[in-house]
Image (cartoon, rainbow, N blue to C red; front, side, top):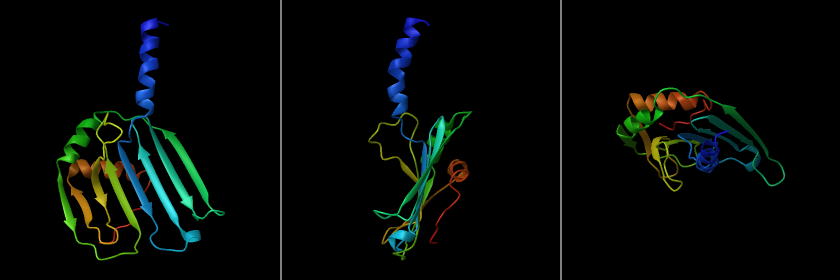
Length: 156
């Protein structure tokens, strides 16, 4: 193997390994006894999707199932993320407090580790507004992550 190519690969691996997910979706079951808690999380990266399900979150009785699946994204998802970030974010008051929640966030390709990303959808929690970005790019990103985590709590 070419020494230059090998050295380039070695230095590129850590940056790629620490990449932020492009789209993340989390859903939680609201206010219930710990043994009835259910959480679902999906993280879509450029080359894989990581799906986690937690059942019965207590110190002695909890089960976590993690599935990692390779994916291949063709086309420029970076353009889709940029377009989504520019779409209108609607805010609606949410009066519910103990209801289940879903949040969908996105990060630009190559975003730094401390980047907070941007909201695609949030059902709103106790006193928090329901947030929903409107437009074709956001719809495409949400459809993409819904393939792996179809559950969406919407208190609207």
